[in-house]
Image (spheres, helix red, strand yellow):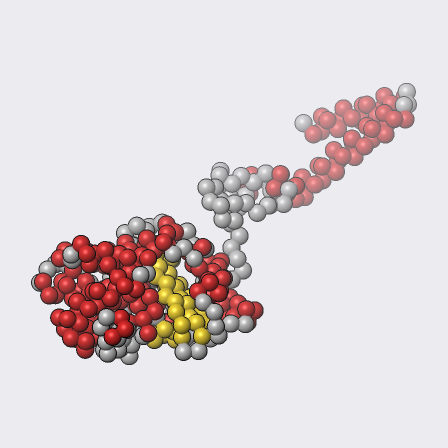
Amino acid sequence: MLIAALRSVARALDTIRARPRPGVTALVTGLLGGVLLGTATLGSSATPVAERPASASSDDPVSLNDAKFPEVERESEGDDTPSREPAARGPAAAAAAVDEYEAEAGVSVGAVVLPFDGETANAGGSLRTVQAWSAMKVPVAAAYLDFLRAKAGAPSGDAVMSPERRENLRSALVESTNESIREPVKDMVKALGSDGAAQQINGMLELGGVSGSPVGSAPDPEIGGSLPIGEAQWDLVEAANFYRSLQQGCLDLAAEDRAFLLRQIRAAPQALGWGAGEVFPHESIAYKPGWGPSPDGFVASQFVLVGVNEQGDGARGGYVAAIAVKLGGGDLEAAKPHLRALAERIQSTMGVPGGSAGPTGQC
């Protein structure tokens, strides 16, 4: 076909030479040059279909258009996330981002990223130990449910818990009310004594990897003889490990008691939706915050299970994010923007995993 076309063009040129018309002559000459140039280009660089690489498939055809138009960045179908990943991702990148934020903000912060799958923790910022305040309510509630189970010889504490105590625990874990956690603690003090009640709580903490028996046994008369659980100090990495142990089923709790606790902290973001609750989608997290004065200022923290479904089961790639800030003064309102900023940096490097449940029992 190409040879025939060239012959036709040559005949046309002969005709024009016999009866020259300058404009037409230039046009046909240009066409002939284009045909010859196209022939040379195809002969030197085009890849015949039979010689395409083995990786090419019918779903990704090779065509001349691929040479004309450079590949553009595409978004995957049904996903709002661009296909290009950030330059740095993962727990180490999250810790580095927290270090950068601490330097920028000029406040003392700490963050721990602990994957569900048993990998080691990565910590950023200079803050390592904090007062637990209301974040200690989850270990206390776990200890209380196990106390009820053992006392009644029942399959679970949830099975024998009174409606009043059920509401106490719900209010303490979802809305973080202090009065609600004191009644279950006083039940344990009445049955076990103050030393025994503290041992019950510290034993549960130890199962989750928290060392040093942080909860003291001296009842506080100002709070009706309940133990001063919120004043306990704990290491952020160990505290994050406790929350991972709860999610992974490693606390030697009855399955029904673990499920009860996870249901409550799954509901907490709707009631206390600040800090991490402003960054992560509520349907993918469970968490417990704690905040209050410290000996030299004010401290606030949040322990977040990222990538959990309604049953508390974790997605592959799920993780615990423990974030904390310590201020020289101020209150919770002053701390909230820092917690939000820490959550943003962790979310940008770790993402929000979803999908099938990951492995359990990574204790």
